[in-house]
Image (cartoon, rainbow, N blue to C red):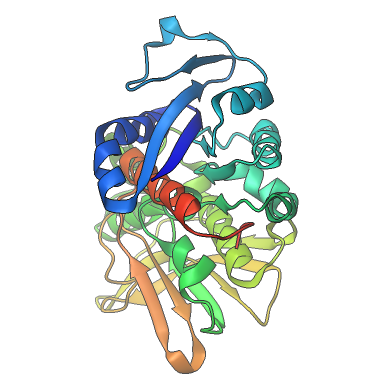
Length: 322
């Protein structure tokens, strides 16, 4: 049995789901996988609480101590990050500190991966620890797993996909004749779109996820990737196509990610998506194309991806981001 004490950073919707899943399924995963996952502490921006089972209410939390002290005192094997991608440098510094203290990093946070990619990989490899990012590349859709390990040896030549569920939903609403403002409002009403959907509609979110996939696939330094964006606007397609926001990259054009809004045939992997679904297609040359699709875009879906990564970090002898 592998003991896996976890420090969880962030207790918003994804963090709460992650902690609840660990609490509810601990015995099941011990039996199925031989790993004993247990959240031993939860940290917010300025407060923390030690955990033995369910997470106590916030009025019982104490002031946060230095992360290094908490990791050492609890013997944490994993730092699980579910903090907002707000551009702060702190998640990157925390991840580096965790690796240096011998903990794996499992993250659903994107922003620090863009700024600290190379440094995280170097420190993780030196420490013999892994950085797992499934929650940042597609939530429950395992696009990151294909890019990181499943397609090793397939010589992937290009990758393209619909990586933002909000954009897919909004484009389908536009095709049905709804104005853009109404389509966005409906996506927000259903809990698909954020209160500020600018990153979804501009293509920035899809570009970020594609940048991370290229880092996993080809070892690109995602901080140096150039991005070309086409925003979602009023759009219609003919009967045989659906308009999709497509992020793409090619191995023979290193350091470039494009996001375009274009028609896709209805029967194709991207054209057949419905509502907020996502899909990614990897062009594997003489092996053909491999597509992964589905997986719910939700806090529970992202938390499930983080659980998968936590179990993988404990069981698989890999180091670094790849």
